[in-house]
Length: 48
Image (cartoon, rainbow, N blue to C red; front, side, top):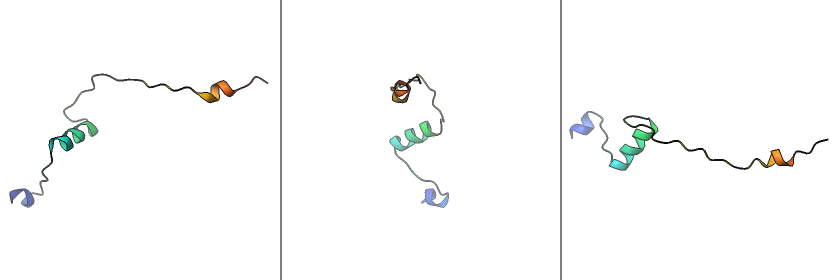
């Protein structure tokens, strides 16, 4: 039980991948997307 002695936690590939992305370790951004939505307040404004 060397892992317990050194306080090492074993994780699966999914968890490792999620941690790498969350902390930006060993990964690079390939593409960035912009998501737009209609600003209803803009169209509700009336000239006084």
